[in-house]
Length: 193
Image (tube, rainbow, N blue to C red; front, side):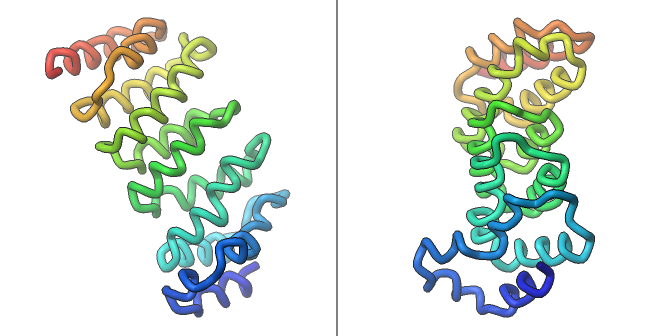
């Protein structure tokens, strides 16, 4: 894997623009779908370096397929996302968050990481975050971790949110020890709007 990623790194940046679209999906990165254990540090370092050079290719050929095609993310897949998502440009992280919002098995730490990396001004980011929060609210309404996640989203996206009604529903259904703090943050946002 390291050798294959290394060969990809040696290609000129514009090389991927000349390939037909189906060829991109045949990159060795698509093999991450079948991964059965965590990647070693050298392989992860190579992927990080590849992301720095060919970000769109890594997102399209590696992270988006992982998020959209895998029925359930295993720890080693989550590890890849945790290492590579912070290196993405905010607009690419927004794409990841949008894809992640369509999953049924949402992991709170991964969701929070993607929310932190995504473009906090983009409406797509707000829509995706609201979709996940709304879906998770009933099963995590007493969870402090969910409360922290909700609070983080409200603080980060708050001034840029266009639609507060959906977030108000999630806040009203929350019942952890952070409820008052979350409600105060929501009231601040409603005063601004």
